[in-house]
Image (cartoon, rainbow, N blue to C red; front, side):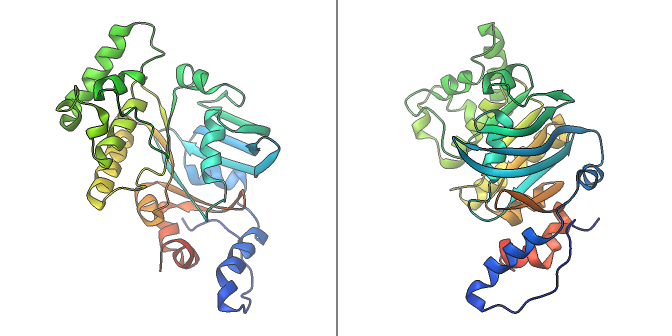
Length: 281
């Protein structure tokens, strides 16, 4: 399936303005329709967004944004800085102000639920872009923070133990302060902590940021395992567009708070315009 976007005649531009002009042209094209997004997702949507207008305070960042991801699917959001990619995740999770539009998860409206309610009742978890570990707490204490909403502490302890059994690197350091962890181990801890409540939907903001290549591979291998073996629905923002599109079933290109292009991750990776703008091709 080819990437979904309109067509526009080529225009000669001075080289210094070529990238900006290309992005502006992308906005002038017909945006993908909801029907096209549903067809692209290939199944009943686990996460559906319609005509979302969102931002912070009185500042509007997203302008009529729509999205579809099927259960157990993955979607990578790419685009220039300031396009609104992280705001999509924050709006889904209840950390940005939704001014209009709707968000649903598994067919249930969640638009105006608080983040705590989305974690407890809607099966959603969010891995922040910035480091969110508590360096003076142990690895185990950090992990248990992910289960703070569990009514029974024994359930949280059991969930943490399952994670330690799966990840020996964390188990070996469970009693050490989190400040001793490498960047890759910290990211592993952050993702693992987000899994403590057993979410069906995982929102991940810039999983590879600041990591060495070997840790980037480790993080994406973990995300792939969560999707393919545990059926998690994953929506991520990734500054390494090539890596993000190689991982994800679907890719969306955001420009100035609007959806400019949508396609499979493979199709967008092969798209010449996406390559020039975001893949260094």
